[in-house]
Length: 277
Ligand code: NDP
Figure 1 (cartoon, helix red, strand yellow):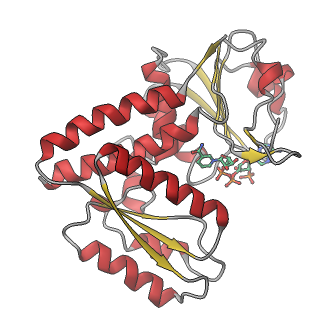
Figure 2 (tube, protein in one colour):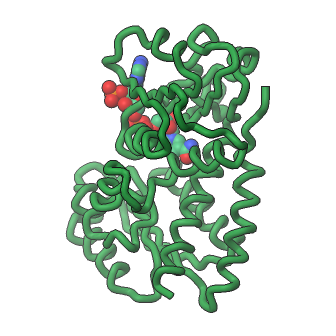
């Protein structure tokens, strides 16, 4: 079994991006909007800004209190959209209850969309056209490609159909000529669907969800999940110890898809700056 090492691959991508930044002639800037006090969001934002710093990308943090109104959140994002020094904008999700996420994300112009969540980019990717891809699925594609894994023609199962992972993941795989099945909570015979797959991408949000009996010998398994186990330790959606005995390739958690997601956020920002230039 080969470990698909997202940490190492992301470090390589960051080094490549640093080169591209140095050729730009100006510092690209990512704006991060953090609303409320969610501790996990605060950690994600800190990690993203640290990665920016390591890559020579500037980052601007705009924080709003848990009590921020829809108007206040929209006006903070709108100011960043109008600021020519800002190349890309990320609104950290989830937003506090009561804020309309779609309306806030909808303000971001497609060219400044750091996460690839705005309708135009998501639509373009869904239609197989050029657009900014959501970072996590783009990170999975990059990790597979850099490991020399060609998805074209492969039977691929995506577990999960969320807007930020499952759906764009399936679209990117289809755009790369994979044969794609999307499974979700209403799927019947999930084990049979998974056993048919040469590649399984798991984005469910449940520790140890994918067990060894759901994986065929020699399959490629990508674990997108980030959960905490009973001891509070970070774990994915895959029963790593059991599945590693059957899979040909497997991503660890942590150190798999997570660092690749951040690398793609940096790439989206550098590409936005290159387009501006
Ligand atoms: P969501 O909760 O939005 O979606 C989960 C999906 O799993 C849904 O489509 C749901 O189906 C499906 N599902 C839930 N239970 C079952 C089941 N028993 N059988 C089959 N399908 C099921 O989660 P996200 O997509 O946002 O995230 C998934 C995981 O990935 C989480 O652990 C999250 O933390 C992690 N994540 C990791 C990132 C990274 O950078 N590595 C980035 C983003 C997320 P239905 O639609 O029918 O409800």
